[in-house]
Amino acid sequence: MARRTQNTRSLAGQAVLITGAARGIGAELARKAAAKGARVALVGLEPELLATVATELGPEHLWVEADVTDADAMAAAVARAVDVFGGLDVVVANAGIAPMNTVATASARALARTIEVNLTGAMLTAHAALPEISKRRGHVLLISSAAAFSVLPGLSAYCAAKAGLERFGDVLRLEVAHRGVTVASAHPVWIDTDMVRDTKAALPTFKATLDRLPGPLGSYTSVSDCADALLRNLENRGRRVFVPRSVGIFAAWRQAVVGAVGEKLVLAQAKTAVPQLEKEIAALGGEEFGANSVERNRARKA
Image 1 (tube, rainbow, N blue to C red):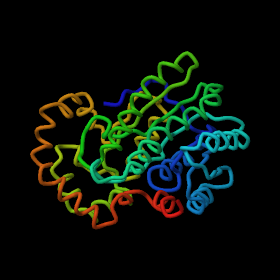
Image 2 (cartoon, helix red, strand yellow):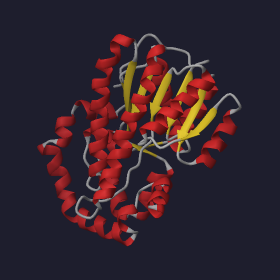
Image 3 (spheres, rainbow, N blue to C red):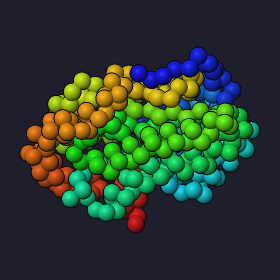
């Protein structure tokens, strides 16, 4: 289970920066943090959506268009938030993509981009925010995934990135403890976002595979419930967030999940599921399938 501290803190008046905040989990967490009295800086690559969410939240909040994989852009986003809010208390590295494809059929660019956004982007976000977070003995929340300790064919780069992000958080926690900064990693399973719904609808093999996953690994959580769990972490500043909480059991037994026993169970399905999945992805446009709208637009402009 996620570990909690006894020092629950009010978010009222705190400055919170959230990446990937234009939609889904990021936008919903921004709404809930604002409702608690936090001042929120929304960061992402969809200016119209960011502006809409910021307007909904009110004039005391702001939005900044920035690519998390661009160190200069993230430094500028943090500087903008500090200029408006006077400082920064919490940063949530939420931006991520989950393109579905196998290593054999994905392009090298698509594989590298998944790592770049999900892992490098989160690292650059933390790096840019750390000087300001340290001034206020603040909190860093890295949105990893249950993919950090599980395996699913078609998500190799995503699983690698999320596992790396968890370990990055573990090391960062040790590096900044003397500064009074706390670091947490969040591990949601399947959140009912547009991306997940679209992927299930487009790829019958993907949906069938999820339906066979054991216990909470095959469950779905609403965006609102996920944001509630993340919000609690911003208040209690624990080390881990599992969504749903029962996913923590699989984290504790990760060696069984990714070891010989777990692999044997997955292989039994993968022999037929993987070739079928590759056919379905190819029919839907190949390497770009599963990327969000920002990534698809980026590919078209390249």
